[in-house]
Structures are given as C-alpha cells and as structure tokens.
Image 1 (cartoon, rainbow, N blue to C red):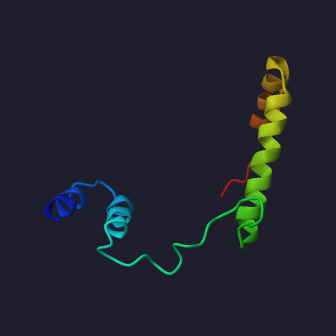
Image 2 (image 1 turned 90 degrees about the vertical axis):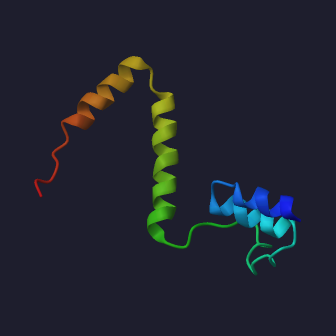
Length: 86
C-alpha cells in the first residue's frame, strides 16, 4: 500500500493522480466518470463552440484543396481585409 501512495504522489498532473487513486480504490469514482463523450452523437451546448468547430473544418478543407499558388493568393487577399481599429 505504501508503494501505491508513493506512485500516486509521484504523478505530475492532478488527473493522473486521481486516476491512480480510483484504480487502487482509494477514492470512489465521481458520478460523471461513467459518462463517455461521443463526438458523433453529442455536440457542444453553446453556439460559439459549435460554429467554431464547423468553421475550422471548413477552413481546413479549403486550405487542403488549394495548391501553392491558390494558397498564396488567398493569404494575400486575407491580409488586405480591412480590420476594425479598436
């Protein structure tokens, strides 16, 4: 049992420490630990994160479709977009 405590204390992150404590049954698992995240079924609840994820996917697909000349032209246009002063 002393080895368990030494191993737990040697962990760098709190998450690793908690996982080992649950593994050795020194603490009870939290009530939400049985839940799993399935990104194909569940989506973030706030609109910002939902839209930001979709935008990232769209931009990645766009950049992957460009050849070098198209990417350079896009970046040149992007840098010339007027930005707010505040």
